Image (cartoon, rainbow, N blue to C red; front, side, top):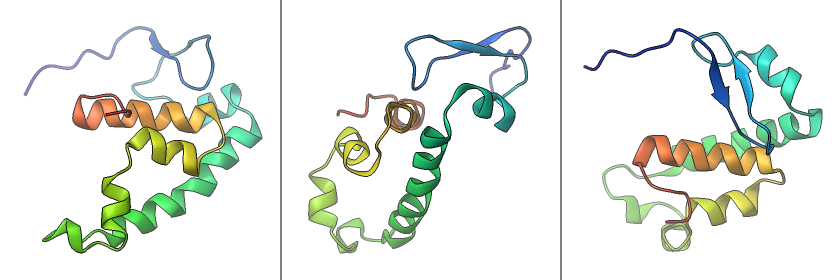
Length: 108
């Protein structure tokens, strides 16, 4: 395990061209509330059950048995985000999540 450094100012650029800072280990709900509009937050809240349902539908033993597997396999995360989210904030969140989880951009 590698030592993680969390002291000091953290920067986040998501949903806007201008980055913003926070000082806790992770941004708090208040940090997000202060930076994003109600529409942007509602877009995330609207998409969350869609993502949850999709995750729960995946057949972990044989992913190609998942409902709509061929259609999903043909999509990039970026395409899925554009189809299911309406804000840059949502699309940036999908992009960042993909980069953290897989080390590649959502367009791949």
